[in-house]
Length: 272
Image (cartoon, rainbow, N blue to C red; front, side, top):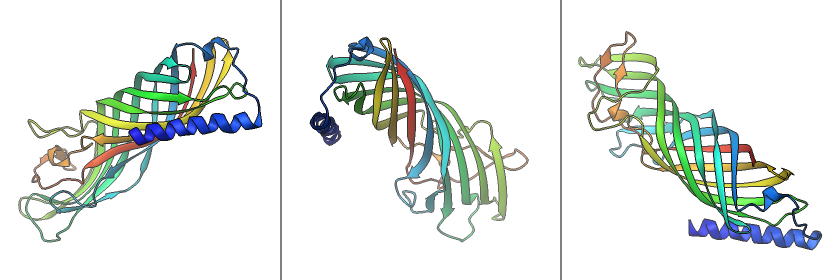
């Protein structure tokens, strides 16, 4: 985090110095640009994915593969407090919807009762999030301001769905195939969870602002959001169903490789 803040500070300093050599700085005449406390709103299309931190689960029973990305959407409210001219504490409230696709394939090909041989999961998950961070911006450059931002986000899970295709051995060690799409992913464990109920993410972004009127400024930025704690999914806790919607029993060795939920977001918004 310290290194990232230093990089952002260097970016802002270099941007100011570079443009100062080419053209004189222009002080903004817009009130929106000098307010200590600003509020805003934004929308953002996202490209999200779910990534395992290792190629196998902790017990080396399953190989884990990230099988694709998902187009999602984020929207929310922003608040900024400038404790110095170009340095602000930022926060807000936002809804982040996305997902991804993961394949888990058993290393051994030897049949074992109540064991998943291969599972392909397509996830759709949503988190209500509260971000907190630091924003650094340049002086006005032809009324534009460039900015860098870094922070942490606390997310609370509000929706979780998954479609899945499974090949598994039943209690008679016969291979069975399932293709299911459930409205809601539920847990079979008293204490475990199917999808992380709370998630911490790190976010970093770059962008630009431009005052539209004395009370309104346009905003654009690209952000990378990296979920790092805890594991996003826990397949050993899932309630799984066959094609006739009967609950099936599989053993608890069915795990993934410490999955993280990430996305890139293109934010478009306004401050007022």
